Image (spheres, rainbow, N blue to C red):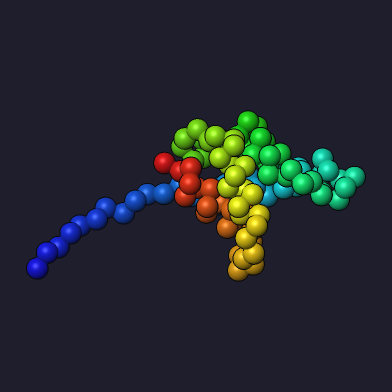
Length: 100
């Protein structure tokens, strides 16, 4: 009989990242209020704010490359999963991708 012991991986808590996503969503909607928040390039706007103007890199414990975050946000935006709030789903995926 073989036994292996695995040490649980301590991940990045997605809750603060979800809070940042709510914040950037609110800010984006205010900036684009004249179009009721409509912006075809929303992912670039979100990623720029998250990387340059928020504590996202500190929360995930690593530098975040803006273009990689844009790509991930676009992929997430194409998914249709209403099982949980979008901020939580995006936060889980962001922390899984960028967290250390």
